[in-house]
Amino acid sequence: MKNGTQNFLMEYEQTNTGKNTISVIEGNAHDWFQKLEIIDFELLLYKSYLQDYYSGKMRCEKSTINSFLSYICRYIEQNKFHLRTCLYYKNRISKIRECDDMECEQIYMEAHSLFKKRLQDHFIKIKRLKHQIISKTLVYSELKID
Image (cartoon, rainbow, N blue to C red; front, side):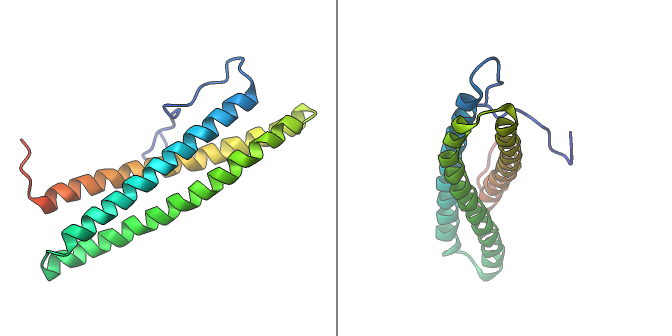
């Protein structure tokens, strides 16, 4: 465990057990892109919900909700950055097929590991944000959950 987070395989990742390295990388990139698209939709949905909720609240509550909305907007921008980067990455994966030696392939594997680490960190942050959104939404909505 490092900085309160744990290293883990993303649920859709496979370990490379004899499979073609390129196929594994392509599969990871495809899955990451889909997950980022879903996150994009979810964050926009949460933002929209809070904006609708915000319109009917008193001034003191509006300040808190407005602050939270700007926090969500920062994550929306971060996610869009990761979406663009992932799309670019997906389009470049085919270059691995042009590698003639292990040194070339190793460069791509190192880049893949770095990209994977960045996305894992992003996914952990998004998971925490969703938890905050849900807990704050429950507080704001005054729902009673037994």
